[in-house]
Length: 462
Ligand code: PLP
Image (tube, rainbow, N blue to C red; front, side):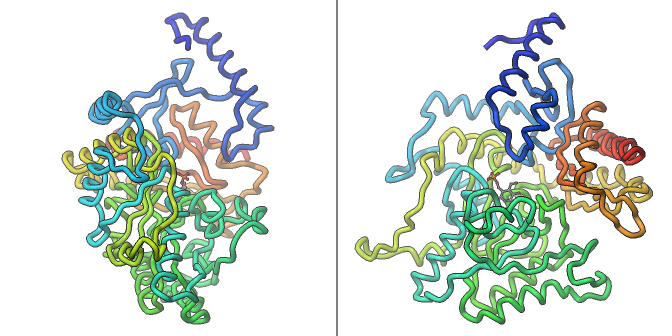
């Protein structure tokens, strides 16, 4: 692979060649490729701390943590060194029938960070696989306990749990999931806690969390049938950073307990400090039966995921070989040693550098920097939980009228933000900020300023 020389001409030539090759061979995820092929891509070439650098040498704040996974910044010495040291031992060995040093150390370190009671770690390699595993684990758990009628799942509208068929089944975003409906298993979808656009037409001050009652109603109508409730705690990310009222997760825990179902909390997005606590469930003092994680587990370095559970769930799978209680599920790269080494290093940094303890000041700085949004004509709501932020753009603040899909308001803001030096990735009309935990207060202020300036400029013309 050729590398850029100091000459601007050589850089430009290399950039053009890479763009052409991208257009010739790549199919990008969640991307309308007709638009993509008509535009010149930004090609990331390297990174440095919380900045990404493109092939032309431009630097950008990594405003969405390279799709919500980077934690400590890029090229962090402790994580780089851990991966290099692991490379000198073994890059990959399997967890099917063998143990490995890197996966043992990683699980041990991970359990130190988990809510008390979650002690059993099942590794895989993506958020979607972690959720797929949770579904099968919950289902089989009830089967093995002789509760054979518990075959159904409850999930929230607006939920996102990944793109495999099981995780799409529990997903609730029409735009992504509707076309696959004939392939999916039936799931009971309950109203989401979206206070700005309450699906029940209520007001937060007086509703008494009626949307939580609606979840319980589903359980009440299906006595003894529900295996688990699957949800993103505190913030439904991919639907546009839909923040839940305090106490909502606790209500979900109570409902599951009353009805004998498992609570599966998907912390693929919210895990590892994003909402201000290591895991979002801590904010409601909740311990789920199964917790899924991926993205930030390696600090955003390598693909690794985990489905963690209690000894109670684990024990239902134990028995004599011939009883076939085994969990027949596994992925080739489960617990990959390089990824585990990165995760152990990242988790140690979280602990030893007291990263979570340092978050309140950063969260407050980001909130302060976003205060002007409350007075902007086309920002309907600012939803912030820790360092996860959604700014919902509206055509009309009074009526909350949405911008038409075809206007691509979020996309336009993203393009403007690039010109100002930040990488964003919107969700429809919601501008998302999800910076690495490592951003300084000054960098968070810069990021917020770029986002607000971009919104101002774009909404003035669309
Ligand atoms: N679950 C949640 C809550 C997510 O936000 C995501 C991805 O954004 C996933 C699952 C899927 O993760 P992956 O893309 O690693 O499969």
